[in-house]
Image 1 (tube, rainbow, N blue to C red):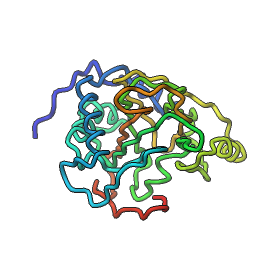
Image 2 (spheres, rainbow, N blue to C red):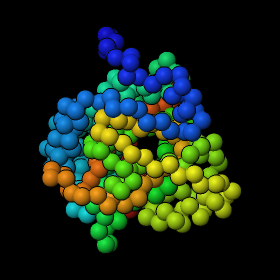
Image 3 (cartoon, helix red, strand yellow):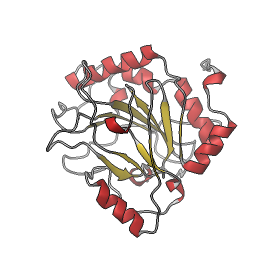
Image 4 (cartoon, rainbow, N blue to C red):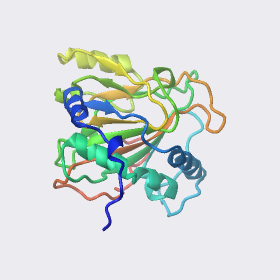
Length: 258
């Protein structure tokens, strides 16, 4: 197998790994080409329209309101697969995890509309690890790729700094009540150091699987092509350890959480 060429100057350095290990998250410079993100946006639109390259028996039309969350979308749309397979993402993840090789565990497509009364689209404080306990690795990490410039106003991802070293429970991706979750976290003895992110298109954020993260509403304006996102693609990577290979699990019945 031929190893893809990677511009080493775009990869994270030793000081970035130190930051990641200390804080539980790290944001890259602008490294992803615009044409890759343009194609991914077209792929997102195709996926939502049901224009799939490979069949997906679990596909349903996305809701008109509220947060859209689709797992394993890259298995069905080639433009999303091309984004997920970017060597630069995997190489950076491997450096941050301090491992010689890395595998793709999961991908997820998120679309957050502009917040309106009755259609809140928060992502509750949670850890990725709490939903991925079938893998033995405690060093999994997630790469988050926004398709547009995004900041706190637009509902970007926020991290609780240093929370990858916590033992915390009672969190919930699907909860709209961030305040209640924050009360629960402080009740367990943890101090909240919330780090909101501001990212330009082409940057990538990485966070440890135990880092507590979430996001508030999108109060931004509606872009012309895709009303009121930011959409984002998430990848989760474990270092090479014992666990299930990447494959689509049985579909979760409506109303049940993974």
